[in-house]
Image (cartoon, rainbow, N blue to C red; front, side, top):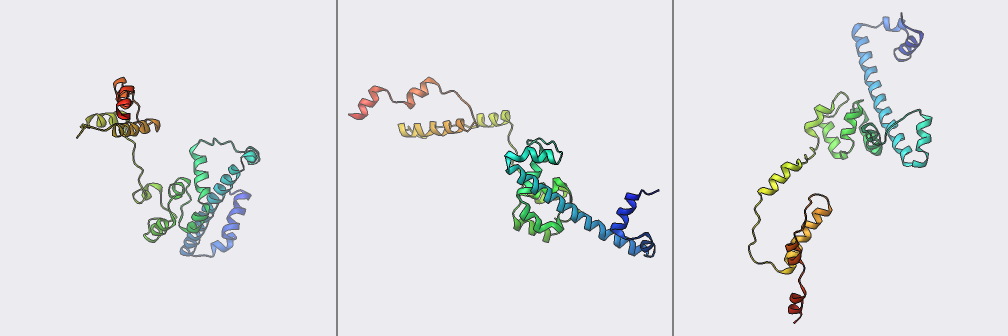
Length: 214
């Protein structure tokens, strides 16, 4: 037997049982489909608004803990769920323009949130972005992230590179090459120890300096 709450929910969305019984099977099916799409849109609205509220509340950092207490939510700001909130909330204005074409799935909306407006328009026009689409189905049409090369693989590739000097280098050119390596080292892309001999070459000794001055 249906509970009172369930009965009220059905009647609020579909009308009285007497009305439903008076509809044909096709009419009832169309009504359910219409209501489903309406609820999907409402769910999308909720996702966008909840994300916007969370993102805005996080911006007022001094009051963020109070906000979480009020909504009785414990969330790790390093978690993937919180990242979804922030990315979707940050793009609220743009995403709201495509509300009728967005699925009610957090992960799918998150994946397309950073796409520019023209790309979203094209996805909708081409029929790729719609309320029933999944993140997996959208994958071929999304920009692919470049995969990082494993450190050991990268090292093997670098070791295969043969470096030859085409001519004698000036002191300035030597310093420029070493400067590039040092920049990469500072960016923590590579690490190395500069051999003492190389340090001597890169830094002219007093005799060379005197000769250059003369």
